[in-house]
Amino acid sequence: IVMTQSPVTLSVSPGERATLSCRASQNIGKTLAWYQQKPGQAPRLLIYGASARATDIPARFSGSGSGTEFTLTISGLQSEDFAVYHCQQYNQWLAVTFGGGTKVEMK
Amino acid sequence: EVQLLQSGAEVKKPGESLRISCQGSGYTFTSYWITWVRQKPGKGLEWVGRIDPRDSYINYSPSFQGHVTISVDKSINTAYLQWSSLEASDTAMYYCARHYEPATINYYGPWGQGTLVTVSS
Image (cartoon, rainbow over all chains, first blue to last red; front, side):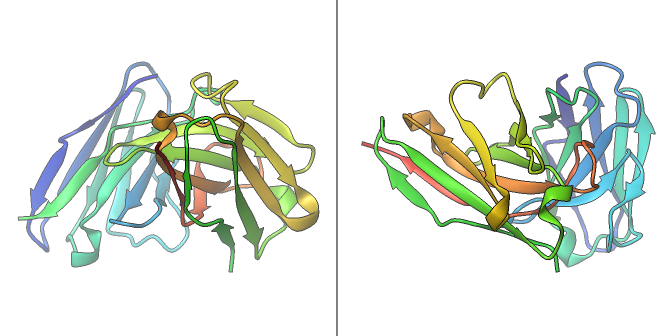
């Protein structure tokens, strides 16, 4: 399953809303996760099951979607949120795949 | 606190062998699968494979099958990723990650800090 993220780069001002998209090449239901990766750091799980927040993830992060279209929304962007965001499907558990990532940068 | 501690950076020549490690702490090691993920410089994430520490049951990505070996020593809460003959294209950061829930559900957290593997003649 091919995961396609858009845009590649998103320029957002602090305090604004960021909307990131992830598209699956086939129906994956809600078997989608989102990760945040800051420079020089490992990824961190944000969202699983398309919309469930992982432990200690702030409420400004929200996920939605099902089937082939998914969205990660960051409401009220804070300075620590500028990072790369990856989506991942786990519908095919023997062929887990990630998207290419979206970089959220400061406008 | 749940932590995964990976071994340090490695510089190897093509054809050499290598084993990197990932030690879990702060949780029951045998209750959660461990997955390995590759990230080439400036690129996205690629799933390498996973292992169940209880019985060493392993799944490999078709892209990595036959080129890497995943193993575990549950007596010391450590998982391994190894190569018998490295290639320059293996140059990447390798992460281990614990499965988030104690089942085969395939989303991951927390992650190790990463091990940078550089293969160059």
